[in-house]
Length: 386
Image (cartoon, rainbow, N blue to C red; front, side, top):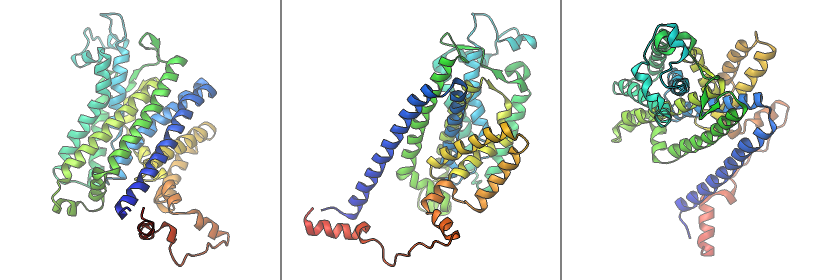
C-alpha cells in the first residue's frame, strides 16, 4: 500500500532512470561511433556545435527556470576561452614570450599571465573566473532588485564594456586580433592535430552530459522549485521568507561558469579567441538557440543549438547573403508561432493542430483515463493489499 506521494515518487524515479539510460546511450554513440565515422573536419565542426550547446544549457538555467534574460553571456564565454588560450600561448621554451608581445615592445610577461603557466590553475580559471565575474555582476544588480528588461539592458551594457576593454588591450592580450591557438601544443601534441581534436571532441561530449545532469539535478529539487517560483512571482517568494537575491546570484554564477567551460572547449576546436565573441549579436544568438528548442526544458537548449547551427552551416555556405534574414525570420516564427519552442510544441501535442489543418479532428475524451488516475491506482493498491 502506498500514498499518492509515493506513487508519484516511483513514477518520477522511473522517468529519471529512463532518461538516464537514453542519455548514456546517446553519449556512447556520440563519443565512440561518430569519431569513427565522421571525417576530421566534420568532427571538429560537430565538437564546436556541442560546445555551444553547453553554453545554451547555462542560459536556459537562468532564463528558462529563473526568468533572467541575459544578453551578456558572451562575456563569460570569452573569459573561459581566453583562460585556455593564454595557457596554450605559454607552451614555449623558458624565457621566451608569445610572438605578439615582441610586436609591441613588451619585454617581460605581464603579471596576470604568470598563473597560466600551470595547467591545473588554468583548468580552475576556465570556470572560476567567469563564475566569479558573473557572481559579482549579479550581486551588484540583484541586491538593488533590478529585474526584467532592466536586467537585460545592464547585461548588454556590461558586454559592451568588456568588449571595448579587451578590444583595446593590444599590448596585453593582442587586442582585436585575439589569441590564436591552432599552432600551439598541449602535453607535447599540436592542438590542431587530428588526435588532439578528437580528444577535445570526446571531452566536449562528456562534459555536455555531465553539465546536463548538473542542470537537471539543480532544477528537479527544492532549489529548482525556488527558481521557478522566483521566475513566476518573486514578490511572493520574498514574503514567504526566502531571499531571492542569494539564489539569483548563485544560479547566475553557475551559468557564467558553464559558459566559461563552453568557451574554452570552443576555443580549443576553432583555434582562436577574439573579442568578437563579446559582441552583442553572438549573445543574442544564444537566446535564439534556447528559444527555438524550448525554454525550461534543458534538452530543448541542446536541440535548438544544434538545429540552428546546422542551418547556419548549410545556408551560410550555400547562400551566404540569406543567413541573416533566415535568423531574423526564425526568431519571429518562434516568438509568434512556437512560443514554447520545439520541445514545448511536442509536449503540448502541437501535431494535432497540424492534423486539424488537413481536416483531421482528433476525438475528444469526455473522461480522463482511469488507468492513469493516481487516486484510482491508490484504491486498487488498497484493495489488492499492495
